[in-house]
Image 1: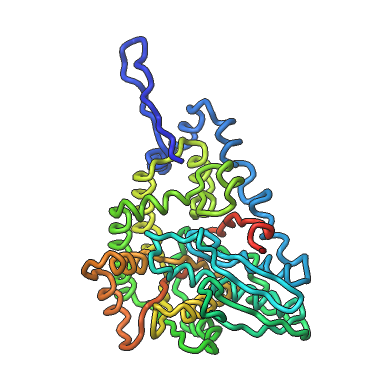
Image 2: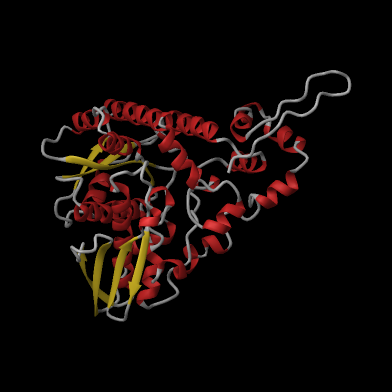
Amino acid sequence: MATNIEPRAAQNDGSPPPPVRTRRSALKVLGAGGATVLVAATGVVSYRAFDNGVLDAGSGAPYDAWSHWQEDDSPVGAVGAAILAANPHNTQPWRFHVTTTSVDVFADPARDMPFVDPLRREHHVGLGCAVENLVLALVARGFRPTVSLMPDPADQSHVASLALAPAPASTSPLHDAIGARHSNRGPYLARNIPAAVLDELTAHVADLAGIGTRWFTSAEEKAALSAVIIAATEAFIADPQQSQEAFGWFRNSRDDIDQHRDGPTLDAQGLSPVTLTLAKLLPASSRTAGDAFWLDQTRTVHTATAAAYGVITVADTDDPATRLTAGRALQRIHLAATSLGLGLQHMNQITERIDRERRQGVPATFEPRLRNLLAQPGRQPLVTFRLGYPVRAARPSPRRPLAAVIR
């Protein structure tokens, strides 16, 4: 997906050719007021603007699910809400089977990430997020769902079965936030989150057995966890297989988005409007340049502006049903945070490195560091996220249509 740019020929007067800038190198000059000059000098603004969706960001068929998720009152309509759930690297690892009396949720093994998520931890958590959205949407449509996790021991891809019974329709702030929930990867304000707000978020998952939430709020705690997150990011991009697999899911252009309707995009990176426009107009970055930019954002934006970190803890991170339940908890927290005006970003680098080291059979470096920070004997960290009051609203990610996920 990266574009290789060849050096331009030397000028007739013998002077050296002007530098060719990629997205990452050009972004560095924004603070010096260079964006306008660079954009005007490309000579291909109109084409790049069209090709990369500068003028139609977040609109069109790949984004229709975000605006139509409440229009259908049937169980199929509830699946339209389920596909808006948080999920790892926007792989959307789900399939659904719908009848008038049940909805079944299946994992889609074609959407595994064997190097980034080798033990399928995030895969199951994302499916649990979808189950939670599905439950909220079914209740709002006049159904009482009874949820069974991992209902078929002979089919590990069958992750949930929801039996439906008629009931009075009921909505909640969590349900109403489904269409507004997005991962906010931008900067957060230098503003603490009141303890009462964190307690409110925790209260939303109190009924989910076996799920705990550990908050990191002091400057010392945040600095310690930030250091591990940065180290894990460095290890991730130094691992060619993890780096290449993650880059393969990135959708660099509007054509990519229209074709795949999944994966991370420039629009969802939390960039300022000027920076985002410039990034779309310039040639695509290489994998290594993209990795370097991600590491820089992790250091200077993600960890530097986190008002708090949260870690969802469980007794056994390897149990699929526990992972699914934790995914339901994560989705509730994200929806509740959205309803309270908070931004939330999943920070998966540490656990991705923990599982990668386990799969490779090498000495553990990140598991003991995170366990020591957690300081909760008998509890294991499953997922990590950051919270804060966002500087700017998050943009939506593309979603595949219902026809692609209902079997």
